[in-house]
Image (cartoon, rainbow, N blue to C red):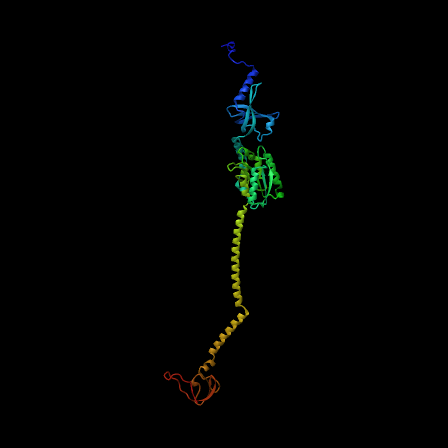
Length: 398
């Protein structure tokens, strides 16, 4: 069929008209906004606009970020970055050129994890992730610095937690941006605090960001930020995102908390727990004091008893008692005691005791001492004692 034959049956366009019709069709038949998962290729900045190609390895399409929009973006892609793009189609009718106009974009999870592993592979051999280099957290922090966005729910949660747990700790709030390519600003804030940590009497620093996707936390995966945290003169606590999110900053920090609130819980003692602990210590000290006092009283009682035994009165009394016992013994052994019981002492004329009848002879003068006096006598006869006759006086006297 020839052109002349078809001219009456088909619509006829000029080039401009055809391109306009295609553009109109695209506007009516395609979504005004859409999401694209892609990899950035050949980004170029021209007159303030960023031109690039979006590709998935099988197909590609040109894209542009206008200068006015580029200034608003928190993330500027580079060659090979995986991105998620919010865009719309731009069709230039004069050239029949189709381009994706990028309204917003963020790094894809694949790109974020790739950056994470790259930085990790550099820092891990240097020992920056070793548990041995982590410093212990202060038990009773006097002052801590909170680095987070202001205002934010993360800051409100941390302030409330600090007030509930341990209001005695002073808080220094340092506003920082936590969204987009702001690593340099975060690093600068930490470096300023490091220089002034002694003057500010800081005991710890908390780096916090609440919520967000793993892509939003990519700002905390930078190598320079990690080295800055590693050289900070005071312990660093990271409370970034959620419990399942781990960043390079978390690995370098002295303590990694799951959330900003958990960071304050790890740093600050709980006053209710401490109050109960103090009450328990008080009871324990009272028990120890009572036991000590009881032991001292018992020792005093023993000392008093020993002092009583060495008191002069007691010594004198014991001496008197000893003398009385000796006197009683002497009296019991005294010949006088025997004389009082009826025995007698016989002496010869020279006053010597007569112990045997053989010591005297008949006619000798003797003296007999009784319990109440002396008797003079003369020996008339001597008669030895026999067993049968029983005991008698040693000599007969008249």
